[in-house]
Image (cartoon, rainbow over all chains, first blue to last red):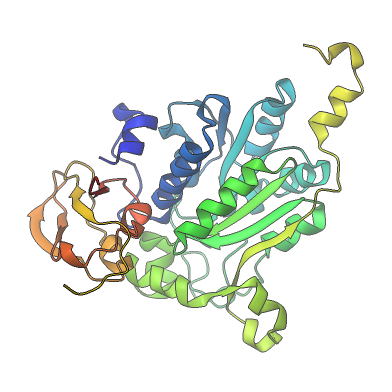
Length: 272
Length: 79
């Protein structure tokens, strides 16, 4: 077993519950590296929603909340406000974050509370059997869109940016090193950090949407579709069609953080 | 001897048969084709990858970082 897993994971819960070749495990792997490099394990408080990605935090030997569908961010807000020294990281899926918990997500972004939300996007409701999600691309076949999806998908990064998030980034599991840098930056940033990670789902999204359940092929497809944000700025809309723009999309330090603003309003509470 | 740009050398690549699920992502991400498909079965019954030419390894640890089951470890040679 990897020495990092030996150090940070609950041995009784292993092996991981994910299907072979699932991108979620890669994100856990990279997250452990980020925790190791930053040395923040003692301050960590993790929150997971419902879905495959919601299982991720439950493997770590830190404080973990595994909560209602779509309600990971409100629980995390409570955790952060009771003790602003905590490093609260939320693991959520695309259905959990953009679908069921969409309203909670935009309000947390508006408030600019110091959370790090890592959204794993596989473009489908994978755990429940492959239903169409708010992030499923147009014309893709799923269990609930057998003739192709007719709805238009969300660009969740644009949504976060418009709602007021102060750190927005997107990357894929095919780029582990940039993913590590972005997770570290997101945790360091004081304010609402949103990181979208495009991952492969061989069991549901791969089989029905892409026509292959080979994880290596799916990883190659993701890598081929990725376009760095510097190149995307000069590209025409036709060139951007079907591409994934990766990199740091938005970063500002101008907005005040919520827990800081609240505790400044209660001067007698400051020393506690 | 051929001059090499390698800064680190790999001593061994350990693949844990208790956790490997045989997804072969490690084979797909390796730039030097160090790993290949093997016949050995993991404890869960998946056929595991095997180390084929360790001499080519760049110690980039992409396989270790990509492994979704944290089963793979790249052990660097101590200097």
